[in-house]
Image (cartoon, rainbow over all chains, first blue to last red; front, side):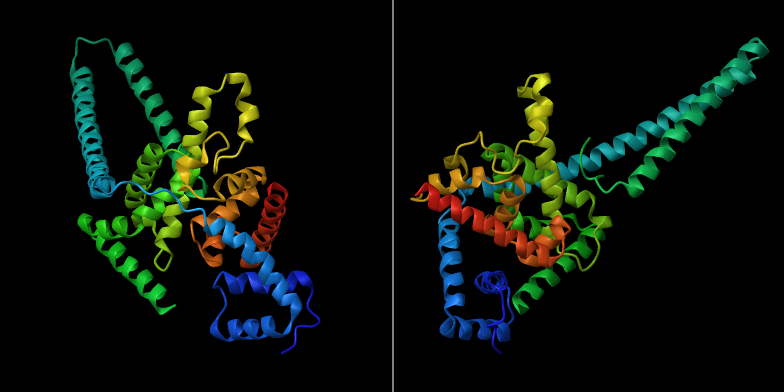
Length: 153
Length: 191
C-alpha cells in the first residue's frame, strides 16, 4: 500500500494515531514500514515526537500516601451521610403529613368553627396542593430532558 | 487490548454488585480510579485540597447515580463527566466569591482547566520544561487546552475523549492534531 497521494495532514494524523497507540497491529505495521521508506512520514514523526516529549515530561504531582489511605473512608462517609439524609427526609415527610391530616380532621369535625372559616382553609389547602403538584411536575419534566442535570445549580 | 476489556468487565461486575446494594464493593472502583480522578480534578482546580474534596464528591455522586449507569459504558469516562461538571461549578462559585459582581460576566469566558492564576508547581513535579510548557498551554484557547489535557495528562483514548466531548473520533483527531501543532509553534517561540 503506497501513501504517496496522501496530503501532509493525512500523514500527520495517521502518524499521530500511531504514536498515541491508537492503531491496530496491521495498521501500525504499515505505518512503521512507511516511516522507514517515506521522508514525509519521518518528518511527521519528528515534529510530533518533540511535542509529546515536552508534555510527557510534565508529571502530575502526587499526594502523600496517608491521603490515599483515608480516601475510601471519606467517600464511604459521604455515601452513608447521603443515606441518612434520605431517611430523615422521608421520616419528616411522613410525620408532617400525619400531623397535617390530624390538624385538618380536628378543624373539620369541630362544630364550633364557622363554616366560612372551614371553607377558607379548604380552599387554601387546594391552592397549596395545586401549586405543589405543578412545581413537582415541572421539576420532573425538566429532569427528564435536562442533559445538564448533573450540574449543580 | 484484552487487558482493557478485562478491566471494563471487572468494572461492570462491581457496578452490578453495587446496584444490588453491596456498598463495600464500590471500594474496588474508588481504589482503581482515585489517583486518576484526583489528578483530573487537580488540573481543573490547581489546588490539592480542592482536588481531593471534589474528586471524592464525584465518587459519591457517581455512587448515588449508579442506578442510571448504562451497562457497557466506560465507568471512568462517566465519572470524569460528573467530576468535570462539579469542577466547573466549583470554579464559577469560587470566581463569584472573589470577583466583584461587575466582573463576573468578564470572568465567565476565562479558562477553567489549568487556570492561569495558579502556579505550575502546584500541579506538576519540577522539570526542565515545566515553565515553558505551562506558558505555552496557557496561551492556547480553552478548547485546545482541554483536548490536550484530556490526552496528555488524563491519558484518555480517542474513543474516550469522543464520549466525553460528545464529538466523533475524526473530530477528536483533528482537534488534537491542531492543538498539538499550535503547542509546538508556541514552544518553539518560547525556546
